[in-house]
Image (tube, each protein chain N blue to C red):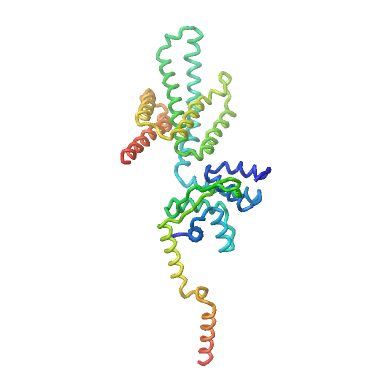
Length: 235
Length: 121
C-alpha cells in the first residue's frame, strides 16, 4: 500500500475511528484492491458513518440549536462589551482616574463576565454533546462571523471586536472535548453565576430572550451533571 | 426481524466460525450470492448488529498480508443465532407453495399431471 493513491486513501481513512481505520485498510490490502476502489470504499464508509451520526438529536442541537444562533448573539454581546470599554474604561484610563469609575464599571465587568461565561458554557456543550460533528458546528460558527465581519463598518472600532467571544468559546469546546462531563458543583456555580449576572437586565425591558437563549447551556450542564451523578450512584 | 443483508452477514460469520472477520465475511458473501459487498455496507451493518447484541467484535492479530494491520474479528452471539433462525423459518414458511421453492422435477411432474387431466376432461 504505497504510492500517491494509497496516501490519499489513508488520508480519507482518518475520518474513521482508529480501530475501524485499521481493520478497513487491512481488509483492502488483503483483498488486493486498487487505490481507486479503496478510495471509493473508504469514502463511502466515512460518508455513511457521518450520515448515521445525524440520526441522533445531538448534532442538530450542537450545530443548529447552539453554534449557529449563539454565534450571532455572542457577536452582539462582544460588540456591546467593546462599546462599553470605549465609553467607560478608555476615558478613565486616559484621565488616569481608574478607581472612581462608578456604576458603569460594574456593568462593564458584569458584561465581560457574562460574555466569558456564555461563550465558555456554549462551547463546552457543543464540544461535549457531539464531538464527531464538531467540524459542522465549527463551520456554523465561522459562517455568521464571516457574514458579519464583511458587513461591519464602524470607524471607531476594529472588526475584530465582534470576535471577542471566540477565545472563551474555543476554550470551552476544548474542555468539552477533553472531559465531556462537568462536576455538579462547578456546573451550579456557572449556571447561578451566569443567571445572577443577567439580573440587572431583568428590571428593564431589556433583551431577556437573547439572555435566556445564551444562558440555557449553563443550565443544561447542571441537568447533565445531575443525571450523571444519579447514574454513578446507581452503578 | 433481521433484514436480508443482516441475515447474510450473520450466516456468513457463523459459517466462518473463528475465522470470521471483515475481509473473510465480505469474500464469503460475494462467493455465495455473486454480489459484491461494499466495505461501507459491511462495517455499518456489523456495528448495527453489535449494538443489537447479535454480534460481538474485537480487534484481532495483525498479519503481513494485511500490511501489518489488525483484523476486526466477529462472533455471532446466542441472540444472533436465534434471530437468524427466526428469519430463516419465516422465509421458509412464506416460501411454502411458491413455484421457485419446490424442486424442478416435482414441478415438471405436477405441470404434466395437470396437462394430462385437462386433456382427459
